[in-house]
Structures are given as C-alpha cells and as structure tokens.
Image (cartoon, rainbow, N blue to C red; front, side):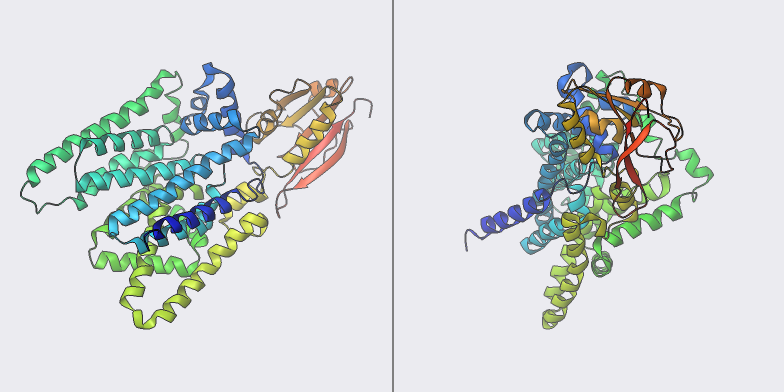
Length: 497
C-alpha cells in the first residue's frame, strides 16, 4: 500500500493533537507557568524587556516563542501551553526519524511514536507551559543531525546541528549534553572505508563548526547585562565539582532512587522491566544503536544523580525519548525472536499499556486521580504551586471590575501570585494588583486595608493555611488543591467590618 505511511501519519497526528488539546486547561496554571506567561507578556509589549527571563537566570527562547503565540491568542495560559504542544509534535516527528535512522526499521519507529503519544510523562509535559518539552524536541533533532553527520560528514548537517544545539542552549542549560556527547556519535562512523582518514578529518572540522555555531548562538545572550545570572541560577540546582569531591554521596542515593522511581511510575512496571531487558540484551549483543542510546540516557542521568541538589521529575524528560526508543526496539525484537509465542508477547504488551493508558486518561479527565510521580502531583495538583481557584477568582474579579475599580492583594510577590492575575488583567485599568510578602495571618498589610475604604477590595491567601484572624476579612471562597490538604482562599476586605 503506497499511501500507508501517509495514512499512519494522519492517524498519529490526529491522536497526538487530540490527546494534547482536549481539556488543555483541566490542570490549573501552576507557579512556573504563571511566571513564564508573565515574562512572555512583558517581552511582547516591551521591546526593552525581551531578555526579561535572564533576570532570573532562565534562557529566553521559550519565552520569545510564547510571546509570539500570545500576540495571536488571547488566553495567555493557552498561548504558553501551545508552545509545548507544538514542540511535542516536533518530538514525535523527531523520534520517528531517529528510530528509523538508527535501526532502519519502520516498525520500531512507528512503535516509538505510538508510545510517545500515550505515555503520561510526555503527555503531561506536552500540555504544560514550561521549557522542558521544547528542550526535549531540540535534543531529539540534535541527536538526529549528530548521527547523520557521523554517517556522512557534511557541512550542511554540521550547520543544522550547530543551530539546533544553539537553540537548545538558549532554552535550557541541559542542552550542553548534546555538545558533550557529540563524539559518541562516532560509533556510527564507518571506519572500514578506504577514505576513513579523510572523512574523519572532515567530521572533526564539521564538528568544530557545530560547536562554534552553537556557542555563537548561546553567547548572543551576552547582549543582556543579566547573562551572568544563568551560571548563578544553575548553581542553585547543582553542586560544584569541589562540593561533589568533598561529599560525593550527599544526594546521590536519594537522587538515584527518585529518578528511577519517577520513570518507573510513568512507564509502569511491565514496560519498565521490558525496557531494562532490551537494554541488557542490546548491550550484551553490542548493538551500536543501544550503546549510543544508553549513553544518551545514562550520561545525563548520572550527572543528575551526582551533581543535583534540587531535582524534579521533569529534569528526566529530555532523555526519556531514548528510553522509549529502546523499549520500542525490545517489543519489536521480541516479536521477531519469539514468533511462536506471539500471543504471550501480545498479552505482555497489553498488560504494559494498562498503566500508561489509565494514567493518561485521568490526566485528560480527572488529574487528581492520575498516578503520576509524587513530586509532580504535589507541584501541579495537590500543593501550594498548583493554581486551583485561580480561574474562579479571575471570573469574580472580571465581574466586579466591570462595575468599577477593584483592588486585590496577594500573598506573594513572585510566582503564581501576583503573575497569574496580572497576565489576565494586563490591559484592564480597573483591576489593581499588589503583591505582599511575608503576610501575617492575623494582620493584613495596612495598604490593602486602606484601599478598602473607597474600593471593592480582596486579598488572596495561597501559602498560609492557618485561620485568618484579621477583623477586616470576610471569606468569599476557598478552593482545594486537587485532593490535597492545601487551599487557596479569597477574602473580601472591609474597612469597617
């Protein structure tokens, strides 16, 4: 069937966008999304602040793309999340190309695409307005160009790879791994050809060009006076070499356990052990593809285990596609080697699909029920970073501001509050938002009480869970964070109360 690949791509594309766009706002805005949406909004409207994210040590590419989306999409959260949606589609195409390039086997490539679509790890982050899905896409394409260049060294591939890695470097510092691991792509270099010396020297020269282009793109950020903050920000998350030498195991055991547990949770037990079996089999058989994929996985994994002092599940996302490819290789190989036991293998695959499919289903319909990593569940659903209640509060403020000026105080000056409100009331002159930190549960800031003399005034508590004893407050509503014990509370402030 000549049109079969086109038909399969139509089905995969439909499945991808259906799973990424259905109920796109069912998970509320969370702290980082509020920050990034706000930065994008500022960058869009103020050319002098196009590098605003560097003030917090974050590279700006994601923010620039989100700003472009916000120009055409009125809802800032949807605009920001759509960056990840389209980046994820780029990852889907990339994972097909990389799988087919490595194994020359379309069954492995199609299987990898299917798994990418249904795994909750990739589903979750392709629907969130943060940097990681974009970094993952860029990384997959960097691997594609690196392998292509090793097989057939050419200037155009070197330039494309340099641009790709450079874009990664202005997305997130983890993209440095694709420069460090470039020499490992030589495993695909054909040393048996007679002109190997000439081709190898070409590879060295083109790799130097790749490195140069990537560094030029990255160092363009020096145009901002805040470029130096990137390094300082990175050190908030990782330890220096001297710190590691002094106490190498300080975080290593807990980091290893956490990363392994998170990947296990998102894959499910069956697929996790099938992946391990395929990895061991591939290494035992000295398959170049598996060795290379193992390097792409375990080099950053080991670095995070040893160096990170702050760790989130999303830090593993950019090397998770290579886990998917090994898993796909294993499934296809099982069918080829044990064709007599086809029914047993099908049963194993069906069992393996139960956990990721059920988790993904709940992410799309009822997130608190989704069995995702505890670290992610706390951040996005059950604890203070989650924005349950934000949309309801926005609707209340929209109604009240249609009648006149409204003043709002928030517990917090950076993060979910006040930014989740500011992005929605950026052009509304009737809504006046003030952030405060810290806030005493027994005494509101005097300024917000004074506003209540003449205007409708509210105060939002997000961190504080204790009873609010200030006599000027009246509880309007409280919103539970997922299935946790954390609540967001909206109080009306009345001066004469």
